[in-house]
Amino acid sequence: MINETLLQLICCPETHQSLASAPPDLLAQMEALRAKGKLVNRAGQQIEDVLDDVLIRDDGKIAYPVVDGIPVLIIEEGILVDELEDSSSD
Image 1 (cartoon, helix red, strand yellow):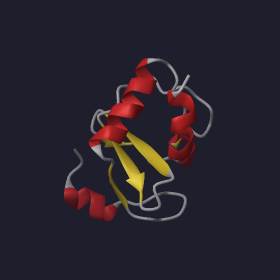
Image 2 (tube, one colour):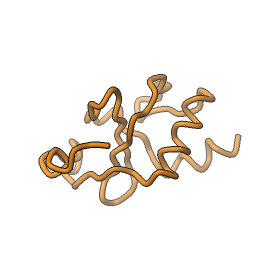
Image 3 (cartoon, helix red, strand yellow):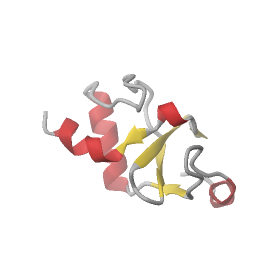
């Protein structure tokens, strides 16, 4: 889990919306897809690192991975949440 003080200081690098830790079920879904090699970021690259946490944007459309306790706040590293349902049914 990300420190609450840090969450108050950081934001989405694209829209500047606030970020919050994703619900446990979303994190579990993303981690399951990652383990199957089906989780990709906006750049189309497969995410290989284990996700400690995921920070989700206020609008719920983009999630940013947290790897080794460090939020990866790069636009291309964001994960399109709307596309997860499509990937999980494969």
